[in-house]
Image (cartoon, rainbow, N blue to C red; front, side, top):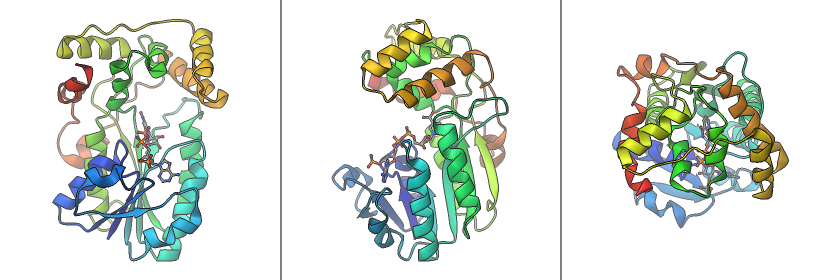
Length: 283
Ligand SMILES: NC(=O)c1ccc[n+]([C@@H]2O[C@H](COP(=O)([O-])OP(=O)(O)OC[C@H]3O[C@@H](n4cnc5c(N)ncnc54)[C@H](OP(=O)(O)O)[C@@H]3O)[C@@H](O)[C@H]2O)c1
């Protein structure tokens, strides 16, 4: 039995159907069973919350492998709770969704959460695989919502490149790692697309594929930070977003990894493919 956390989320929602298609028994840990209905009748749904350890033993019972994904500034504690529950249940292998941390990039925001959580997993008795994702192509959905504060944040990146990775490629690697015995135990993979693209290029591609003009509103970092705070973002998260995109602008985030192609035996999906498959969100 494979337990998928974050099963309603960006990567987990692609991992579940892929595991089912391979004939695996899948259990999803979700906070809201109603939202999990879209996962279909073949998935066992367990309602639980990674911040509440008392809800986890039922979810981890009889599980031998786990896809671990969650989010939030309390991610290190959430995942420590999951790791402790996995150890109690005798789980064999945890495939953890993490974030890329290239040399020279600041360990702020999610990089600091994942760095701490990777340490906890390495120190556990569990076999592990770390999937360090590059910038998700799906972040571009922010441009489908003219009120999204993230669209302003991405504008800060200027001409700095990011090797946007398609969430479906991360899910493909997760499924490989979960279903290949011990072949990927103790491995750390950087999962990126094949070509760095700036957000200026992303917007151009989206506009040409969707036929809808998308304007990148470029403004000074202090103005965008103030807008995030006014929009209710906690100060640490606003600082992390602005800091991370300013680092992208400096060109320290354009790292391309060969891991997707090496593992899957095919090139990563191009950003254009993601854009075509999601053009309806921009209609
Ligand atoms: N976006 C990027 O470019 C990027 C790049 C690399 C790595 N990452 C990492 O990828 C992960 C997913 O990020 P995302 O923004 O795409 O989020 P997401 O997958 O859309 O949402 C997070 C998932 O975590 C679940 N979750 C949150 N808190 C939980 C809790 N207390 N207990 C149980 N489940 C909980 C949510 O469950 P519900 O469905 O119940 O809300 C949701 O399914 C994060 O760790 C992020 O750091 C993101």
